[in-house]
Length: 150
Image (cartoon, rainbow, N blue to C red; front, side, top):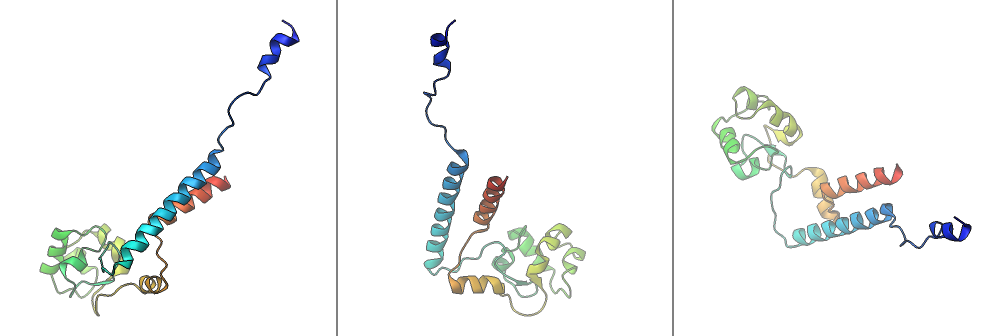
């Protein structure tokens, strides 16, 4: 076999290779832009929707809808919380069997027994500035930065 016969093996006539790092950045950027745009538009309508984790809840005065903003709390658990009132401490939710310990621990920073149900201060500041970035978009951007730095 001569050089002429083996020369075909050296040719690089293949299609250019996709650089997956760049493709991933483009896809993630598109997702972030879409998420930001959708969230921005949905908050611009003026509807004050209650979402999971959006309130600091007074468990002694909150409505069922406000209680359902807590993580792991649906209609049934909200009704149990209301039936077992009053509470003198957050831990009484577990003692009175209104919520399991894991749910109370997950929501501890969002629960109180005195005062009014309010939005967290950071949430109010973000709305005032118009900075709306969803939690999932933040997780995606962190994952991309880890992949690209590796």
